[in-house]
Amino acid sequence: MKFTILLLLTFSTLSLSRYVSIESHEEIGDMIFPKGHAPNSIGSGNGILKNRNAITWKTSYWTNGKVPYYISSGFDLTEEFLIMDALNEMEFATDFCIDFYRIYDYEADFLRSNNEAFISVRKHKEECSSFIGRVEPDQVLYLANWCVNSKQAIKHEFMHALGFFHEQNRIDRDKFVTIHYENMQPGMERQFGVFPGITTSKYDTKSVMHYGPYSGSKNGEAVMTPKNPNDQIINYGYLSPLDIEDIRKAYKCY
Ligand SMILES: [Zn+2]
Image (cartoon, rainbow, N blue to C red):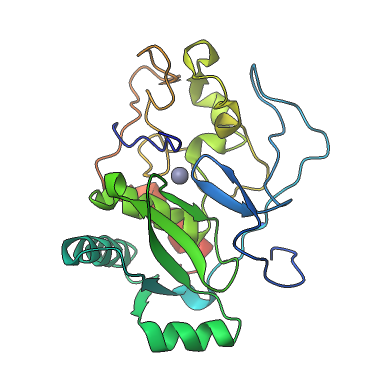
């Protein structure tokens, strides 16, 4: 499977003069960036290219926490319900700091014609992926069959769309987890890079944005282990208290 958010577990404004085409993008795991704007890891551990001129990603947040989303055809009613239910839970958990509101064909056409951003949730054969933050009109958020039935996976992708990276990409992650490159499938190193500019609260091994300990393993051994033996990398399908704090801080709900 190409995309490995593997939920078995358990920056100012983007400086684009105008929106870019959705065909023109690059990906780090399930995180989508406009081509040429994917951040480079500043280097950590083995196997990661060090780059002194790292591109940093500046997240554009959604204005006043209002996030229009459109569910394209291809999802059945049960799937639509799961998507809406997952988003309702996120709204509720953040004490309505975020307002996901569903739009339909007419409103989507209107926003598109006015060059205004909204999330277009689309079915994909294999990918579950999203842009980071508000990027462009009609910006895709892909859900495949294997993840649309998981509210945890839906929340994970929508947290990307709210502007968040994976937790293990934080610049301070080496203080909290050990990355075992010797157990990692080749080619996944970039997904375990550290990217400057990610501003969140404390490191959180319970985050819905943290890869599971075995994500990307080539041999069944853990790819990540917590430094603190009393800690655990796990998520139960809900936003963690620190996920909620991160969202509420980013969207100025305090
Ligand atoms: Zn992800």
